[in-house]
Structures are given as structure tokens and as C-alpha cells.
Image (tube, helix red, strand yellow):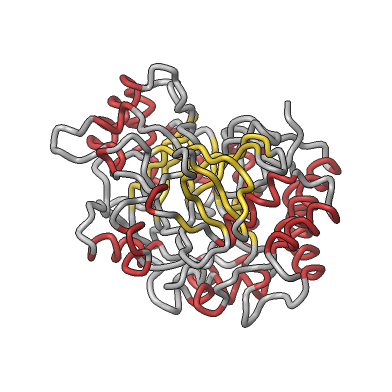
Length: 434
């Protein structure tokens, strides 16, 4: 292929059942997008909702390498519409890559567009600054720092523990930059609270609830790094769970409560349920047994892949299978030095994992791998996985769901092209609209 445009158009022709919007979205998520100065935000003092760096960097460079985009943040997400491909409304999480063939820039009339190989391919919409971002907590912290919203305002993302206790080369997941992201924000002098106080979280949610008059925020996710010992004297279930209990006591039924945590023993999972959590995300990261050991050494050491999977199945007894939604990082299957060498092998392996969980009524979801440069896999694989892998995965994902009679998981907003708001992969864009 002589250009990225030719590659994308070839894949759209070869896989007509995958929405064309998803093809572009996956390419933007896997490879990033560049921003002209005309398309950057004015941070928290402007009219555009800026990127919050809510857990990982999701960038193809460190802050010092991003140029002006490190000083004037890009928008949290963009919406693609129209253009020569007549794209339906598509929400895409922003992953900055100054070297990307995709570029967001303003035309002479001031209207933003997405350009590929120098050609305008879509109109670009940016999220307006929400009213609740314009207010601060009593201690001066911003709502964006304590309780940012993503997915076009649908989800409040509460990263209450900004680092991970899997630490160092022998424990950290090889694709994850949570610890580096914390370090780089602290080095840049940005506010980036390591452990969020529960009262701060409640105060931020009160501001969101007060000013989100259209009730666009529908769910919250409690998450952060793995806890192998304790934080503030609490183990993992109690640490994340006590935020859920406080939120549900203060705002009963206001939001769908979700928690992303390790695959914990059934008694700990029950504590999440007792605290008011409705959806549990015990992420399994990558399906293949060897790759799990290579790429998730801390999780293999402390829990082990087989036990991790047993705990996921056991958690369905507590939450119900439909409310157990483990994530995997789509693309690391093909990461050197240990990953699969062909798209056929990688898709077959991942589909095996999908069939394992879906046969038990559990519907995984996935995040499109962003090869962040401070991670071992990002350094070794700056281009990520081939776009064809991501497109064929979408096809296999939808087919596997149909094989087991499953529908889109709860807590992710509406499915379907033109309707989905889930922004860090296209799995919801690729499912049937309801």
C-alpha cells in the first residue's frame, strides 16, 4: 500500500460488514493523531473540554515530546462526521502522535476537520467545556483532576489510586504506563493526586450532579492500580469498595456503579456487591497463556492465569454473568518479541478467549492498545498491531456474541454506528443498534 488512505480503503472493501466508522476509529486509536495549534484547547480556562489523562497517558510520546500539545491540551475526545466517506457520528478518544498521518486542523473558515494524507476526510467536533468543570472544590482542586468525565460525558472516571503496586520490570504489565504517567505529570508540575480522598470525590460528584442538569453522566468507574498489600490500611476490595459505599449512600441510584479491579476471591467480590457496585471489571488483559505470563508478570506471580480465570467465572455467581465485563488489551497479542507473527494466529487466540467467557454468559470488552513509548512493549512496537488485526477482531467479536446469543453489555451507553459513545475501542460501534 502506497498510503494510509489506500490501506484503510482496502480494509473497508475487504470487510464490508465492519462499519467504515470503526475502521477509521481503530486506526486513530492504534496510531494516534496530530493536532495543529488551531485545534488545541485552552486547558481549563477555554471553551473546549481538555484531555484529562484520566489513568494512562494514551499518547505516542512523553509530555516533553508533544510540543505545544503538552502546554495546551488537546480535547478529551473528538467526534467524526460526514466527509467523503459519509461517516456517522463517531466518538474517538484522543491519543496524540505528532508523527501520525492523521491531523486535526482548522480550515480557513475556522471549522475543524480530520485530514489523512493531506485530504480532509471528516468534520471534527470537540466536546464543549461542561459547566461542572468551571467550578472547583473547596480546597481549590478542579473537578477534572478529581472526577473527570469521558465518553462524551457519559462516564465519570474515578482513578482513586494513581499508581500500581505491581512495580518494576518483573511485575508491571509490559504495555501499561500508569506509573510513568503519574511520574510525568508530577514532573511537569501538574496536579495529579496519588490517592484521592473520599470526601474530595463526593464533593466533585456533588458539583457534577448539581450542574449536569441534562443527566448526561450515567455511570461512574472506580479504578486505579493493583493493590497487592494495602493502601491507607485497606486491602483492594475494601479500598475501592469504600468509595462505592460512600457514593451510593450520598447519591443512591444516581449513577451505575462500576469497579475495575483485579480478579479477587469470591468473598472479596461479594464485598464489592455489598458496597453497592453494580458492574465488575476483572480485566484478563490477554488470553494466550504464554503471553499472559510474559506481559503480565505481576498478575501471574500473585494470582496466576488459571486462577484469574476461575475467579472471573466465580464472580458471575455474585454479580450475574451479564454484569461481569473483563477487559483485554487488543493488539498486544501481536507485540514483539513474544507475540503472534500473523493476524490469523492472533485473532484465533483472542477469539478462543472470547468463546471461553461468552460460553459462560460473560461478555468481555476491549481497549485498543496504544503503544506508549515508556513501556517495554511500546518501545519495541511503536507502530502497534496491524490495522487488519483490529478490524478482523471487531468482526470476530460480533460473530462470537451472535453465536452465544449475547447483546451489548450494560454500562456502556448505546451500541451501534452513529450511536456509540464508548471511545477507547470500536466494539460498541460495531454491534447492532437497538
